[in-house]
Length: 359
Image 1 (cartoon, helix red, strand yellow):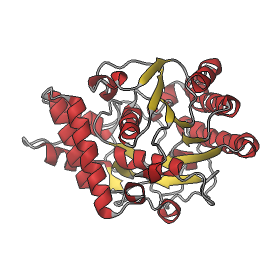
Image 2: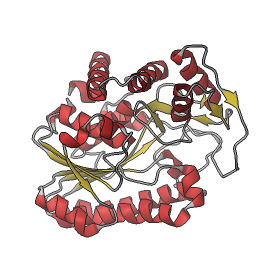
Image 3: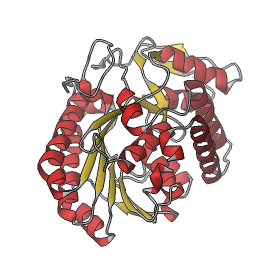
Image 4: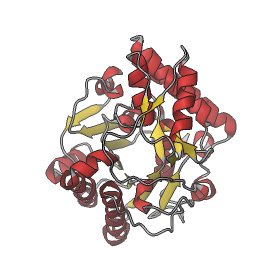
């Protein structure tokens, strides 16, 4: 699995207590990592990370990604050889209301991590997560990796800039030092354990647990929705292949099999799987703010160069997602549930012949 790259590795994950970070830590341990060092500035009591007791399985450090001395100390003290930079301010609406904090976190935070990587003396590979929002509004056409980066709203602009900064560090500092770097741009990631309100799945789960009808503000907006473990599998597949020609220094899109999913369709499918007569209602957004109406991206490059394809359909994704939120509501042991969902996913990927699962 993952070409056995992670066996015996020491890996730093920034944003480890967040939605993607918790699943990545679990996946890295499953793939044979010797130690996962996780950095996060917040402790979220209801997070998947906390509920599953992940802090007992990894080395968990509280701190800010803009603290270069701290990151450099972690890299050198633990002799980290692999870095995944996931930490960011990830919410479009929050960015609109807090532009300076968003720019500082998403741009300067990324630059700080990259500078620590180049000064560490131990890191061999790093993967930086940006976003499909970095492309800006392409009028609904497929995003491809060679498209210009021209985000215009605050969040998209911060991701465009972070992507450009990463390219500059890789070209000027990392590659000349023999450090392999790569960039990930994903569609909208969904799955169990997300807590960020303002996202369709999270809003649906929170409302249905409380016995309310979920409120969907922009039902006609279209996105690429895909499973968190497919995304994390893509990040890890890219990192494991960074020493190959045509991979190091490149950006890769990762997304779902099924494109052009309207928010209304996603909410309808989620409610149907939840059962109990669940349904959503349309309410106008409490305040308007800039959003791209339609986004979809091509992952042909990842398929060609990494052998990556998504293992789960949207219905499979939503089924596992509903299972997670229902079990959390019923106070099932989340650690056991996470392990079961991960093993199911790995088995499915191997059965489909996805590159990382069989290599």
